[in-house]
Image (cartoon, rainbow, N blue to C red; front, side, top):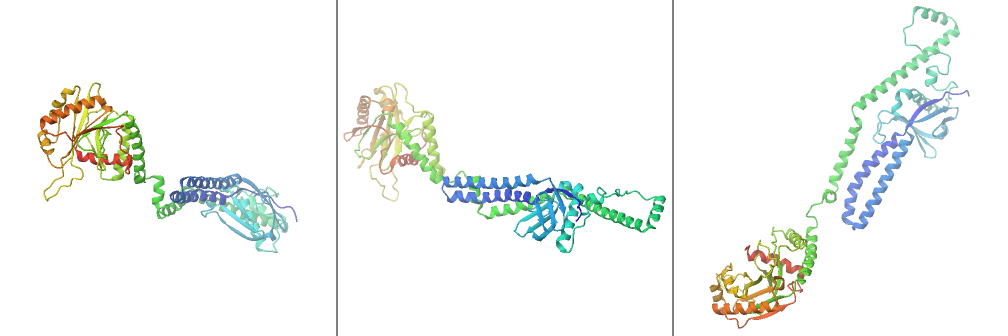
Length: 517
């Protein structure tokens, strides 16, 4: 056959570009749904590895498809037909006999992500798919050659007896005269002289055939030109309507619904976790950790002393931070608050100082909290007094009341000042009433505690006890059953409850002891 005209147009892979968008949005939605669920049911290390691998796969898939779509966009495609097939610059030789099916349309579907771009897809015998897409940016210049390619291809595939013409397909070269002697038809209105020449040309058979061919070319060029303008107009109108954003909204709305359906609590726990999340587990561990630090600091403060009328092994004087623990009614919040206050106390160089308390009967009774710092002052010593109910005491009778825990402290510089300081101490009960209580059987437990932390030595405590004995004897309080004990440190005794339990008991008992100053 003769030489065929060359058809050229700019190629695109709009289907790959649409696939890249789907991988981007769909993969992002899938990760947002799956990763929180995996993080909730899988250990942290495995969840982190899974999230990293899934993210890399998603980014790699998106990048490869987007790169392929960008690489082929705008490349020049050249088509040359012959008797048995056609030759493509991008896909090579393709025989009509190898084509099992084809599809002609426009890239308006979501996965194509294009607006009214012509499209041809060929399916070959080896299951390979070839996509011939026109780049929408070159509608005006390439539509004529692309339409000629599509029509010639459909004619060859639909009619087995059709043979491609030797003059070539009706592309730009043939319509506008780039390969034929006739000039491109003028759109101007013909003159009288032109009509006369045309009528003389039609008088001869050769001239009549040439005129018919020229009219056919003009008619085909006019139809294709109108189709080209209409396509460009539709393209501009659809661009103005922002149809891509409409498609985006149509994709995002279902994805949002899917996320809400697929257990949003798991996603919310990762994106915006609640401050109370796992608080019940973290609070006790944090309190135990800070209680160990506090115990270590108290052990370094040295020995403590106790003079009392009880010899129970469960009774021990303690050093207690002079801080107040808030109570909100929620155990987890209270525990976390206590842990934070203990840590703040230690970090701030124990500026509030230590008061004293007594560990007894599986509980802790601290002396009253004061907003004035109890850090030791040079030359000043402190005695802490505790009046507690008898061991195992339980009130009986309908109107019986439990005996309260009474605490007070005495600060002095000279031992001779102790009696006067006891009279001046702010107490819930006056000393005469306490003296009468001490005559009951069983008598309440009266204790006097001191610590090396408050500049108290063994000799100083012995001198102070001697002075207190004389004062109590003057008030009628029998001290024959009292004796002195010395302890290596003022830390909570390590028992079944542990250090953390002792600190927690301190917090509970303190509210019952009052908010004294």
